[in-house]
Length: 213
Image (tube, rainbow, N blue to C red):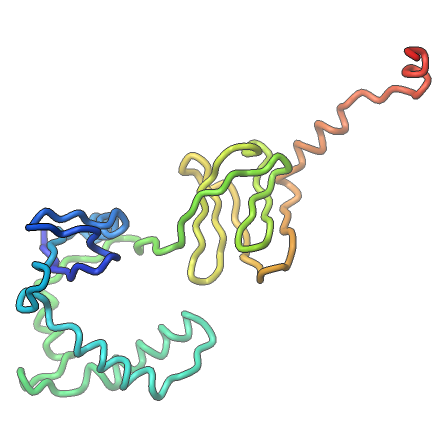
């Protein structure tokens, strides 16, 4: 298994004290998904870090300056892929006298194969389904199958605003996330059993209750 050296940012490392490292649980899931062993840099020892800070600056002033407006994350990724292929990967690196594209071709043989599926980067949280079969997410309410009324469910929100609802690790509902204040979003099938229960309630004439007075 390959080892990946990371800085001590909270997204990866919760605590690093004298070599006793506590990694972020989400980062460990990422490491497991892609099949690598994480290793944290020594705090306050810059020489153990990878040379990545200059690349952040390069991206900031060479990609985000000409491209300042984006329609969506998909649009950003499309422009970034084009910029990498046509600009960033074609510049010559003075230290190596090669382009990144050339060096990548040489490094391909040492890389691990990617997993069959992408790592799930969705926002994660827990909700409690109300008695009426809805959960609240970002100011709106979304229906959940009636079997989950009064029970906890987990939610995941993707970058393209798809809301997925899970019960016992099983997908039970999906919705398109609405803008705040849009109101209620209902799938009729979720609450059909509730309406059936209402229709089965016995109806009595008012005279039956008058006899009790």
